[in-house]
Length: 433
Image 1 (spheres, rainbow, N blue to C red):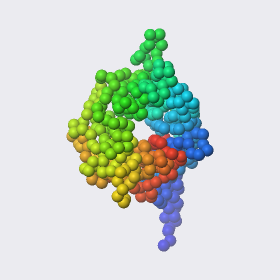
Image 2: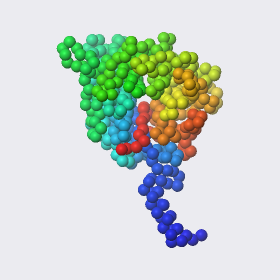
Image 3: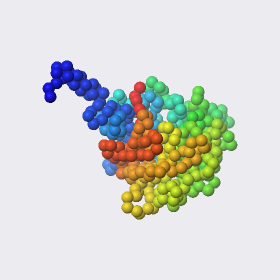
Image 4: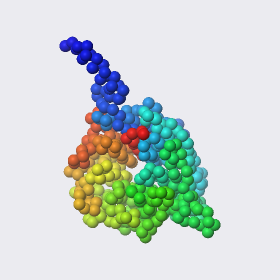
């Protein structure tokens, strides 16, 4: 069939528009960018961060023009994106000094700031240091103004514990920065809540024993500490200051073996108990009170691998609530089941029972395959796709989420994407403003 002149012109115009919008016959436009951290591969002295474009129609990941950049530090463990998507902040844990963990600042540790280009490519801007030692996690407040960096060891612990080796007990700390909206640059926020006898404000906020993770929800910040406690803080939206709330440090689960992750939203908070790799891992639901303390959900926790949930599942490492607030997903790093077809590492899902205070019921089709050693999970801002970073095989797993059931399924054009090195955490932005 021959097209008329107008038909040919229309087809040419459509092709031009498609190219301009990044559309192809097999996909749609780019709806966001995903960045994944990778620890050093053989022969490398710095960590890596790689970038992907997210396809609107399929959720498929394709490399950005400048796919890989060094993180300007060693052992990257956490990253966050400033609201607006223009700046990415990477936490490099570094390598312990010769005297052992906690005897001084780690080599090649610090905070690396990257500017985001219009195509999702990253350009290194500057580096900063937190006040404590051994940084492990970062979060922004709800406004995207203040950056909180969690250190396993506080400066005070280093001084009072004569080196703070692994065999000693030491508190951690949080360093607070104000992030400039125009440049992304960081400015230290002094702790005016705790003034020493000399009258000079501290440059950090102390938390409990060697914290492992941190979570911000609304005007609250919670640190999960290695002694199975929670340090709850209220965030000042005007100054970024942190203040202890309620009765201070909490012990939310009296019989926990090893709480190792905290996740949630402004209402519900979930803790995972890895049980040191044993056979009884738990997922504990809590409500976040107005004073930032945790109150247990009626009905208690779920044994993740109970016969009613997902038998054989072990080593939960991360929990995540979807954007709708209806479903909870847990990343599990191993299984005790040898049945054929059972994934070694998996994602398991629960529905949050509506009208309750966070009680959970397992999804009917709630166990899904992922890569080896999953560690972090995100959902794209259009509420269509989930992505998981897998540490042991250095990949990203992509899933489609059904908003009605919470069920996950593989992306239509392949669910596994190669990152770099041993993947740690990932983050995404829906736009670059």
